[in-house]
Every structure is written in structure tokens, then in C-alpha cells.
Length: 639
Image 1 (cartoon, rainbow, N blue to C red):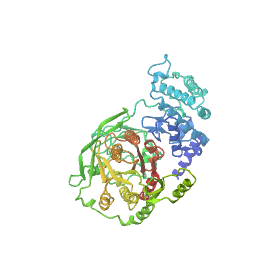
Image 2 (cartoon, rainbow, N blue to C red):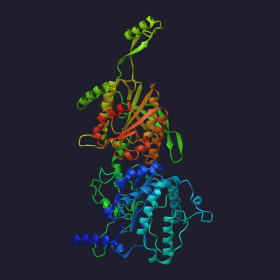
Image 3 (spheres, rainbow, N blue to C red):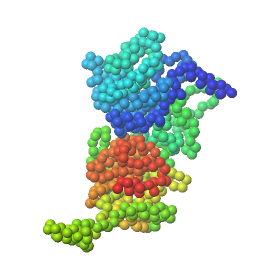
Image 4 (cartoon, rainbow, N blue to C red):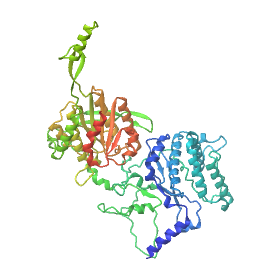
């Protein structure tokens, strides 16, 4: 009963406090794709991902009803850095849903302007008589006005949308007439900065004890002048490369809640804190405490809600991560159990987007092949469950194989062209010069192309996509059916796989060469593939492009099978891995190779357009459909 009454009271007091319109709310998930398209279309960095912003305490004045209701204390503001465009997870500031949606689009346009003007120093955006090193509030004031002027000057069609947003924002802001004189002057200056961008260079001074001003939703929070440092492992001093998994496997990126966090040192005590419970003297603890928790416990279903109630998360590395349980799988196998290494290794370059530099010989790639006496790669026929699909694909792809045809108008040939002979005789009878092109030649034309299928064999392929198959099983079936289909066309093709353990050990597995027949030996190698390590995709693409360069054909296709973003144990993660892969794709296209990526990553649509272009990838929502659809993608690419 008390809980029911409490919920009713919370709804009533929150509604009376105002400040939000839940019925008109628009979530980031609803507009994420549209916002991303607009951000990049207006000149935003294509490598940035769109994600939810954190809700931070702003400390501004609130009405007494809002203080009683406990509402309006936190606000999620848009911000941009070198890797992410963060937008509010939900906007319900205005009573009109269309206006809330327009605010998302305006923030995307403003963020594009911030990114374009990021190289301009703050001093250059101010007059000579202003301070050379303004504080964060003044810097935010000037940069947002400057970006607003840039957007309105370059895209005048957004002016009407901006005016509607400003009018609605001013109507929601506190009344300056009810504020102290100093705060009222500051509020008037902020209103003037919204209505007339560029007219306010500094805010009036206020007493030190005065609360901050109410944040402006149409502006971005003070941009980061430098990229945030990556999260480092305390033990190894390098990027861990592990992202926090969502609460549910099918949860989309935009549904994940962002949290403000700090990195703290590991407490010296070995065991967690022990407190006696006294109901009459409860204490609130707001610092990191090491708590013992069994690693085999089920995940707490209320963990996300508990984290959402914290102002700040504290992160540390105590050397006892749950991930350490699988570290033995990441150790390199012994030589007796591993594939055979072909050669001493191939040095390859890698693109460093931060320095705009191609690091020569930065990566070492090892070519590998299955050992001849490896029972896991022993010759094997096509599995029974694939034979029916293989027969259907073989019949379909046999139609792509060019047949023989008669070529007319030849000086010599195997058959006489009767029509040409009749015309020649008629011309001679009429006194005209007859033609001597009287023969037919039977010509057989070949499909002048080569394809290399490159499969991601990283550790993530060991995850299950259904109750019967893992990702690696789906990739294995896809390669087998792909080989059966291309055998019917007569096209030259190769099958390879890759994984990596840092930049010094990129493992490139040869399953079938261009000159090999697709027989039981090759099928056995494909059946013997297993999950490897990590995904240094840029190096694998560069080496695959080099292999395709050796084929003297008019068209070369690189077909990539992947299940996630590029990543590795070192710095090859996030933006760094994506930008190196993108540069490898650009280099491949310059050399005449057509790269195309097929992925089962549901989040692939958020980063693959930046890597392969809008028409250079396909996302398979149901992984079990990949084996049958992969040959069809090849057929469309080679028409």
C-alpha cells in the first residue's frame, strides 16, 4: 500500500513541477540513423559514432515544486569529442514531438560545425581585447555562438528551424524578473546570445555563491580540446580492448545508458568492507569499496538500475577480472597443435589517424596453413546438411558460366556463313566489290575475374547464434557453399581466414589458393577452422589485396566475412582500428580491387558506411541465412 501511494504521489508532484513532457518525448533510438546521416551530410566526421550522453548534475536554480519532486536536477547535454557524438538519450523539453525531433537534428548540425571548426583556436574566435585563455563557461559561450553562425551562414535553410527552437527554449527558461540582479543580467546575456549569435563575448560576473545558469539545450557542452585518454590496463599499461556488454544480448547501442565514471586506485585491503547493520544509523558510502563476489554468480538483473542511480561510477583493475578465466584460450598454442607458419613474416604498414601518418613496417603478418598430418583438417566430403543447398547453388551459378557462341564476319573459320556468302554473290553480280568476311568462328569466352573470400576467425566467432550453431559454424558453412557455387562458374577464387594477437602476430590462414581445385582436401581445411584471437582487419585487407594483385584478370573482388568491429589487444580498438581499416579499403580500391563486407553484426550499419561506403557492405540480421546468401552477394557483384 505504501509503495502504491508513493508512486501516485511521485507522478502527481512530478507532473506539477513541470519541466518535461513525457507524452511528447523523442528517444535517440528513434532518430539515431537520421541524425547520423544529417551529421555526416553537413560535413561531420564520418568516423564518429552516435551514442547517448550522460546525465550530469547542473546545479542551477529550480522551482520549489521541482525540489520537492526531485526532478530537473540532472540533464543530459550534447557533446562531441574525437571518437563520439553524444546526444541526450531522450528529449522531452517541448510539448510538441516534432520540435523535440528538430532539436536532435539541430544538435547534429551544430556538432558538424564544431568538428569543422575544431582546428581553430579559441583565441582566433574572439576579439583582440578579450582574454586569451577564457574559462570553460566563456569558451562554451563563444564556441557555440561561432558554430551557430557557421551553420546559419552555410545552411540558411536551417534558420527557421533554429528560430522555432530558440523561441520554445526561451519560453521554458526561468523568468529574469524573479532573479537577483546579477543572475538576471547573466540570463539576459544568454537569451541575447541565443537570439543574436555572436553578440555576447562574455557573461556578466555573478557572486561566487550564485548557482550556475540553466543549461541551454540548443548548445553543445564545452567541447573537449583534446581526445580523452583511452582506458588502460593497470597491469599492462595498454588498452584492454573490451567494451562493456549490454544487459541483454539483443540490446542496441543507442539503448545503452551512458555513465560518468572515474578511474581510481585499487584499495590496499585484500577483502571487502564488513559493516554491522544498524537500522537506526544507516550510513551512505560514496567511494570505491572492494566487495568479494563469486565469479560464478548470475548477473544481477538490477545492476543497470543501481548504476543509473549513481552520480559517478568508479572503475579500477584489481588483477582478478572475470575475463582472466579465458586468458588461457588466448595464449598461443604449441607448435605441435598450431598451423604451420609459412615464412618468417611479412611487414605491413598501418595507418595512425591521430598523426595522419602511415607507419611503415608496423605490423608483422604470418602466413599459415594447416599441417598435413593434422586430423582436424583431414580431407572430408561436403557435410550432408549442405548438399541439397549446394546442388541448388551449383545449378544457379552454372547459368553464369559463359557458353560458346558463333562469331560472324571472320576471314577464316570452321563454318561458312551462308548469309554472308549470299550477299557476296549478289554484290559480285551487281558489279560491286564483294566482302571476303564469309566465315564463322566458334568462340568460348571466359569470365575474367578473381575473388578472395576473407573470413574473420576471431575469438568472438565462438559465440552461439542459435541453440545449434556458433558464429564459426555459420562461417564454415558459408565458405563451403561459396566454394561449391564458384566451382560452377569457373571463376578463380581463394579462401582465407585471419585473426591477430597484437601487431606482431597477425595470423593469415590459407585455406584454398587460386591455383588449387576445390576438392576434399580444401573442404577438410575449411571444416577444420576454429576461433582464433582478435581482429586486426586492416593488415588482413592489405595482404589480401596483395594476393589479388598477382592475378592477371580484369576484375578483382575481395569479399570479407565479419562479425564485429576491428579490435586487438593494443591500441587497435575503437577509432584507431576503424580508421586503419578504412585506409586499407581505400588503398585496395586504388589498386583496382572491389572490397565488399558481409557482416552479422547488428550494429554494423553504424560504422560500416564509413569503412566501405553506402554500397560496400551488407548486414545479415539472421546469421543462419549467411551460408545461402553469401554466394548471391557474389553473383550481384560480378554481373
